[in-house]
Image (cartoon, rainbow, N blue to C red; front, side):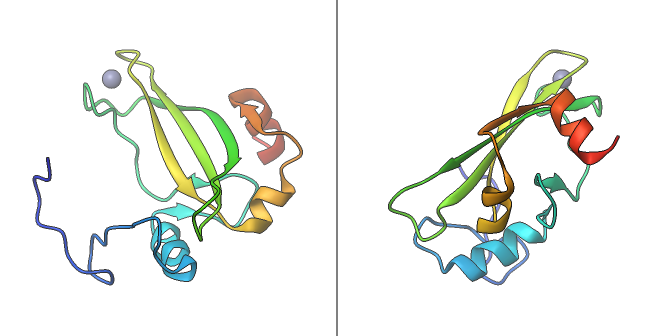
Length: 118
Ligand SMILES: [Zn+2]
């Protein structure tokens, strides 16, 4: 159920569909996620959708290719709430360069922290 009125493709909350121009998709996704490094990093505070708590852990990143879409390269970012244990996933379209830089398909929290140096 859509509870808010969506705006157009260049509006504040554009809706992304699988057949959208990949340049538009990456521009929109890039306004929410930093896509310049090895992993998509949120440019917003992630709050738990269940308890609204701010103690959300970026627990895993899984890279994959979606055949049949112009925006083929994806990263599923799994998060987990350290307060209520709710786990959820963001499906992020990523640039081909980020996908090609990955030498394994799945990274856990420890591996991500090591690669990012913190
Ligand atoms: Zn929670």
